Every structure is written in structure tokens, then in C-alpha cells.
Image (cartoon, rainbow, N blue to C red; front, top):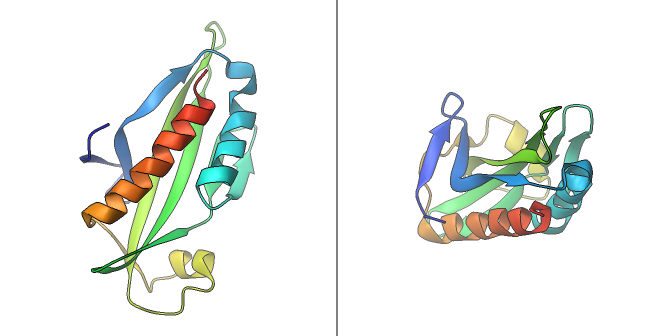
Length: 140
């Protein structure tokens, strides 16, 4: 997986290269996605089995450039005539001033933090590690 990021959806969401993959066991992939988000992405905040989307709580990464909030979204697309599902892991990032980070979801949803278009290497490496773990847990 490369360290580079691709920009998608109007500049607000980043997706890690290689974060779209297929799983052969589509019938249980959504349950594995929920478990993976709970284990590696600060827990699931929004779970919609009908839409096949799991969104995490905000997670904070500290760096010399300030605090970065990261939220993960795992979505599955199943075709009726295909075995398995396509899985996409998206990452939304915001940079925050040094403030009280006790309530990350409220802070991430407020206008206090700005959408981040670049990030320090240590933040990129940490969030990519979480994406790799989600992919490992969901892919089968």
C-alpha cells in the first residue's frame, strides 16, 4: 500500500490507495466490517445494515503539526448475481487546534476543525495501519 492518498467526494474524504477490495464471503462481510471498525477504528458510531455502511467515531492522532481527527467508513456493494462483495474503506480527516479533545465526535462535527488536505507522515502511517487491519479482517 502506498503512502499517497487520493482525493474523492468534493475534497472532504480521502481514500487510501488499495483500500477497495473484494471479499468472497459477502454474506458475512458486513458483520466482519462492524467488528473490524470496533476493533481498529475507535468503535462504530453509525451502522446501517440496509445500506451496508459502517462509520467509526472520530479518532485522534497527535503530531508536531497539531491534532488530526480521522473517521473511517467501510461500505460494501453486493451485486445480486455475483459471489462476494466489493468493499471500500474511506477516511475523512480534519486538523484541529490544540483544544480539549474529550468529546471527539462533537469536535469533529463542529466547525472548530478544518478538513485536512495534507497530513504529517506519522499520521498517514497510523491511519493506513488501521485501514490495513480493517482490510485484513474483512477480506475472505
